[in-house]
Each structure stands twice: as C-alpha cells, then as structure tokens.
Amino acid sequence: MQASWMRSHSLEILNEFGSNLVAFEQGLVELQNEPRNGYERMEEEEDTLLNRHGNVAVERRLSTVRNAIAKRTDEVTEILNQCGLPAAWTVIPALMLGGYLRQLNVFAAYINLELEVMARPTTMQVTDLVKQAVFRIEREITAENNKPFNPVEKLSVVSTGVGAAVSWFFPQQIQRTIFGWCIVVLMIGLVLRLVFGIHLEEIGRLVVKWALG
Image (cartoon, rainbow, N blue to C red; front, side):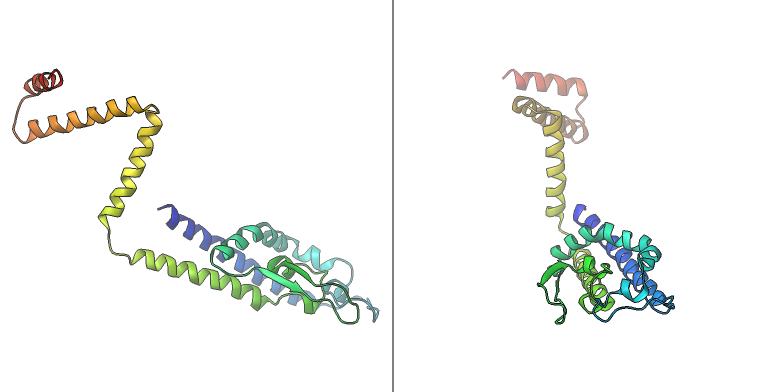
C-alpha cells in the first residue's frame, strides 16, 4: 500500500514538473521574439540568454516557473535516481573563452540563464528524462496491479501490522504473552459457544478448571 502511494505521488510530482519545464521553454521563446531595446552585445561577451535580451528581463518574466522548477529539482532528481536515470549534465566551456568542465544537475543547468546557450540542455532533453521516469513508474504500477492475488502475502502484511500494534500497546514480553493467551482463551470460548452451544457460564468453569490444572 505504501509503495503504491509513493509511486502515485511520484507521478504527480513528475507531471507537474514536466508542465513547468514546458512553460519555461514557452516563456523563453516569447522573450526571444521581443526586441532588444537597442542593447548591443560585445563580440567577446558570452552568448547567454541574459546577454541576448539585456539586463535581467528574462529572470523577472520567468521567476515564478523557475522557482517552481528549482523547488522540485531535488525531489525529481531522487525519483530519477530510483528509476536508474542520470540527472547529471556536463557543461563544456566555449573554445574561445576557455575554462574547466563542470558537472551540474541537468535541471539546474536548464534554468541557469547565465550559462552559454549551447551549454544548457534543451527542453527535449530534460522533458525526455521526466517522461522516461513516468513511463517506468507507470510500468511498475501496471505490473503491481496485474499481479495475481496472493492471500499469504496479504495475511503477512496484516500480521506484521497487528504485531507492531501489539508491541506498541504491550512493550514488555510478559504483557504480550498474557495478551496472547487471552486471545487463545477467547477463540476457544467462541468455538465452544458457537459450535457446541455451551453457555458462557459453563465455558467459564471449564476455563478455570483448565487453568488450575
């Protein structure tokens, strides 16, 4: 039950995250079509989206969706790790500028508008990762739902839960032993009453006689 809930919760997170990635791309496309307001980029400057549009207009327009993506990045990365999917992204510096290779989270790199345009992952790359995780979780859910009913497995889950509850209410071993014997006596009493029709008073006398040996 817990595993099924976790899978469903992961799907909700991934679907919401994927929608935010698409919304982020749509916002970037809209801003790329805007005039640059006379801003001219120097030849030696890095080709970043911020430099393409001047000042920090991109961050202001996309702050809400960027924050939503950043907020969920750790959770989504953990889900991807559980699905065996990589979430690392290697940033290769431009040849003209030089520098060192850097490894970032793929989603953090995607929303980092200070990176060179060619250094950022594309929308297709990040959304494909999310879709792969969704497909794998959906297959797990389908496989779980198609499993044949196993009463032994269900009973083991119930017995484990009952055992945990008993241990919580009766932390000492002697208490659990007495409780166990009370259950046994109760079951015997129910059998004698329902099957053999023996009255409760007679059952009580039989129990006392059996207890005293």
